[in-house]
Every structure is written in structure tokens, then in C-alpha cells.
Image (cartoon, rainbow, N blue to C red; front, side, top):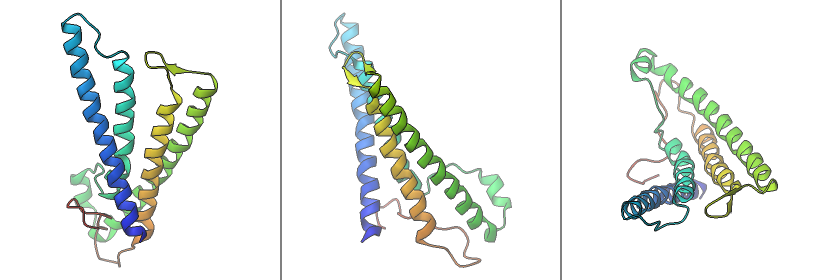
Length: 172
């Protein structure tokens, strides 16, 4: 049950995040077009773009982690014996889980602080705390994805690198 719910959640959040990129691009294009005409077509375009970019970046973390789409230094990894690669991958996944969780917690703290001071995105009048909450949700899901990969499977010795929780074709 959980093995189907979590990947579907990560894909859903990544889709929302990708929509953030699309909206940010559209708002930017309309804003540039309007400014070329000498008018402001979208009030607070930069604030809308900022919110969309935070949404896009934070909401992609969990799916990237689940698909094992993290950055690797392949020439260095090639020198590590296959039996050790799985251990290194698990170590770095644990580090990722800790960092993602720390970012999520700190984002909530900053969101609460910003909201308590009444900080707002000036052009659209939305609390800057929303940025922290979006980041907290995205990175919190990233931490859950990393932990799920750590506990879901422990490949037998000599099996090589662990496979991602979900493949790029959507099967889990």
C-alpha cells in the first residue's frame, strides 16, 4: 500500500512543481511583453515568479531522490568496488535525509518568524512565510523519500548498487 502511495505523492508534487515553472515562465513572458508596450500587465510579477520558483524547486526534491537522480562523480564512483558502492550510496542517502529534514524544520521556523513580523511579498500582499512553508513541504517529502529508500531494501552483499524506488516509466 505505502509503496504505491508514496511514489504517487512524489509524482503529484513534482507535477505541481513543474506547473510552477510553467506559470513562472508565462508570467515572465507576459510581464516582458507588457513592459515592451509600456504597461504593467501583471502586478507583482516578480513576486509571483519567486513563489513559483520556490514551489518548483522544493517540490521536485522527493521525486529526484526517489528516482536516484542525484549528482554523482562517475569517474570517482567507477573506482569504488561494486560491493562498496551500495554502502556509499546508503551513507549519502542518510546524509541527504538528515539535510532535507533540517532544511524542512528550519524553513518552518523561518516561515513562522516571517509571518510573526508581518513580512509580506509587497506587490501581491502574501506573507513571505508561504515561501518557507512550500520549502518545508518539499524538503520534508524529500527526507521521507530518502528514508523510504534507506529502509525499503537492503540489497544482499555483492548485489551492487541499490535500484531507485521508482523507475522513470512510472512503475514502482
